[in-house]
Amino acid sequence: QVQLVESGGGLVQPGGSLRLSCAASTSAFSVVAVGWYRQAPGKQRELVATISSSRITNYADSVKGRFTIFRNNAKNTVYLQMNSLKPEDTAVYYCNAPDRGGLARWDWGQGTQVTVSS
Image 1 (cartoon, rainbow, N blue to C red):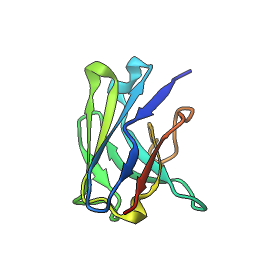
Image 2 (image 1 turned 135 degrees about the vertical axis):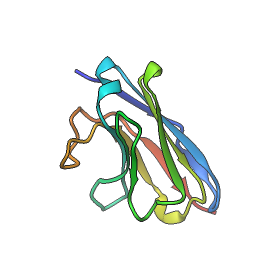
Image 3 (image 1 turned 45 degrees about the horizontal axis):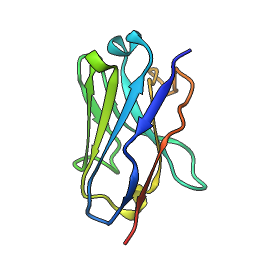
């Protein structure tokens, strides 16, 4: 069973930055696409960024140009650099490995809370 541990969230003012990290307990990490999801209160979980095993990235329109996803396969870790944060970015952020339909392959971790507020 794969374990995912997200970290790096916190409270930040609008326009600020955060870097999230997610460590996976499987060496299969390096051969699959991984991504970051988020879930805001009262909303469905959405996929916001993905990176393939060959480091091709994709972003939701809502974060394009502000967020950057990157990975370190030696550490089985994926990161999300978030800049120019907006209040609407407030959510719990999770990592996982999306299949071609965007559905998560692994069990969810605990997530990390990001709150953007003045």
